[in-house]
Image 1: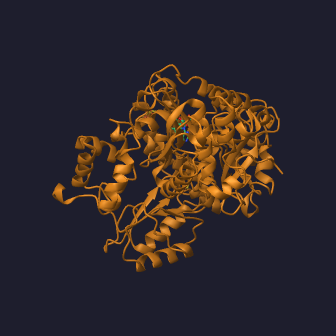
Image 2: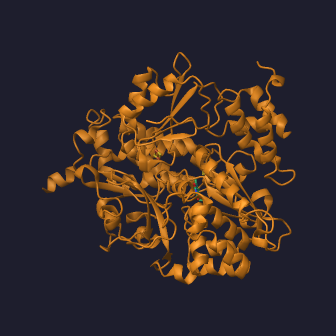
Image 3: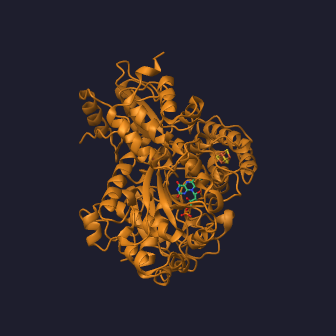
Length: 180
Length: 452
Ligand SMILES: Cc1cc2nc3c(=O)[nH]c(=O)nc-3n(C[C@H](O)[C@H](O)[C@H](O)COP(=O)(O)O)c2cc1C
Ligand code: SF4
Ligand code: FES
């Protein structure tokens, strides 16, 4: 297990945290929990380890359990490590009607993994998710903060090729858009 | 051409910036309200407009505002619901991404009317890039003196913040949203007390949808009476419709309420008809939660009247033969779609999104998903269809929040209108093993074969 003391936000993030805390009335700083968990996940490897969550609890001066129960409720927080490039494909009705299942199958074949799995080199994780509010441009996927829409197998091939050539991913909720 | 009140400038280059937005008449409602109207006068205009909540329930916005506890010593809050996660709905994202200042302007004018000095926009976490767009726009509005202390030199001050969600559909339910904004799990609260009395931080709070708040801008600019002239009966004004599925032109359309459904689907101005020259099988007219209707019932009511895009016309016939306008998520299915397969994605969604507080919802959504899954994959049992009807009935009305109902209605309506398709899956398990079964061989009602 990692020592909590080695986990600390960067100076830039700390300044941002201070600004976020000012958004809420005195005594209501727990409101910053969701935004802080996003920041922590982005900064500490794309997922929330127990020491990371404990660190967030210490920043907000709340009990660790208050962080765990929230982190485990929301789907965006990864409680297990994920690949550097997290591909999330929507599979709900409207996307399914426009071929989401074929796209998922295509990515599975291309990467040699099933949904929910990570490639052996730790580069890609494939997840399926529910409606991302992009049904009019289906099928679609999200990677980092970016939406890729009106997908075809050819587009997916190009995306994976480009992602493969990038080494610095830090994709979690950051824009790392690659143009097609 | 239909009148547009929200999206009239959607294609103006740079409309996402303060400068261009302002040049096109932006922030006029803030000037008008703060300089020439009292907060109550603003509310009166909203009441006169007949504007109904655009988040799904259609509750009159002015009436909701009037319930806000103004006698309390506590601060008041306006919270904008931008959690938009109802499958088939993507209008709020479109509006925030294209014209972020319209929402911000609406937030300022509405907060002034409600007497809120701090307001929040709660945006679903997956829309992180939209959050960046909003934050930039808010910064511009502060710099121009439309946010912060003493706006436009008046005594009114407002701070506006954007809060990200963490990925949970249930946080669209307003009390779950408030819990989440307080940094907790998104478990809906028991009501009463209603948010108007004890909402965010136990203070009087109004929660409104993005589109509702944006609509306050034209209402204040033109006056509530002008706004109410658009539409039919109690469905006034314009509505953003998210159109998806098997149509030629998916996208977000601003319509005048009262537009015939048939025109919306087939005219070039909107959906442009069914793709690939196919026929339409069914429509989910208001987001995943509302009852699905077959072609004949979506175009005409059971009484044979033309169906209109209004709250009243779409719900004509109740649950027997009608549906709901809901969030305006308009999903079209063509003749090759499998109703059971489509329903399975919704059943899985509701099971996944149930917060787990109430056993009928937590357990019932799981059973429904499982049973629909096995029917779809050719493992259905005799009696499964009745079992589904029974489970749906037992969830409906027996839960803390409406998610339970929202999970039950799609199942009940799909069976009501497409029972034969479910029976077909149980009768011919081999034929449905290929997930593209109805694309290969479109479903034909055996009843119609007999009569032919
Ligand atoms: C399960 C569930 C999900 C909901 N999701 C949303 C949503 O994403 N956006 C929204 O505006 N309202 C949503 N609502 C409705 C809200 O509870 C609330 O009625 C609405 O935000 C009020 O705003 P309005 O009156 O302006 O429509 C949801 C309701 C339920 C029960
Ligand atoms: S109905 Fe479902 S989602 Fe709503 S409170 Fe109950 S368990 Fe939670
Ligand atoms: S169903 Fe995929 S984005 Fe809505």
